[in-house]
Length: 120
Image (cartoon, rainbow, N blue to C red; front, top):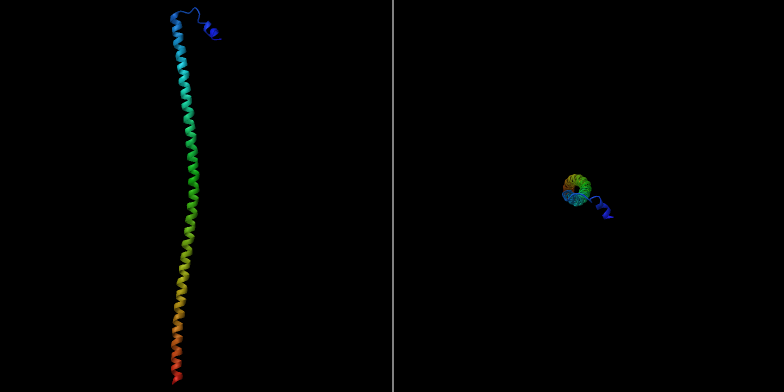
């Protein structure tokens, strides 16, 4: 088959044949260069896809961490409110204990006074 491809060149001058050979060499060279660039392009596209997937994965992880952070902040707020309520309740109970302690002391004094009166 290659003889048919080369047949059209028969009878051409050596100068023209040389020019045709140069052009064919240049075409081959350009084809190889095109293949190399195509390979580079495919490699870069694959790397870009990988980076896009990585960015998407990191965005998803970031969203998960933001939600977790929000949940933990709400939990901290709830715990702080519970702590304040317990602290308030404790103060109220301490006041009640102090009042009852005062009443107990007053009753003891009354009892002592009454016992003294009874002894008389």
